[in-house]
Figure 1 (cartoon, rainbow, N blue to C red):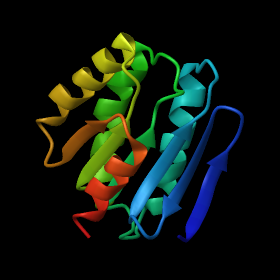
Figure 2: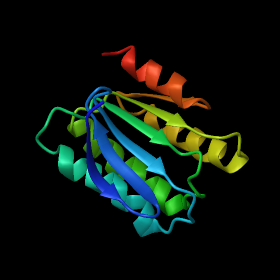
Figure 3: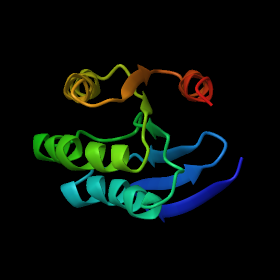
Length: 136
């Protein structure tokens, strides 16, 4: 696997995985404010501008803290269209069975129906990666 790290701090790590043709975010076990939520997403978009490397998105959100409604709305209104513009076709998100995370993901999935992408939720990272690889 070849990766290009575009962001890494105590809250998250964002990178591109060339084997998955994916922008990846691994959320760490820290309470996120709006800036810490947005930063890795913006870094992925900035790095992928003008490149055809962002076909897939993989988010390991098992350790992600609760995301505010305003950040969720920002994600839908800004990040999803920007990622689609950079080539995004699908996303795999790994979560726990936490009801807040399920609610957050259900909101993202329902809003994504207006976009030409597929988003699928998993509880196993390997199954999520295998699903993304099945399109390559």
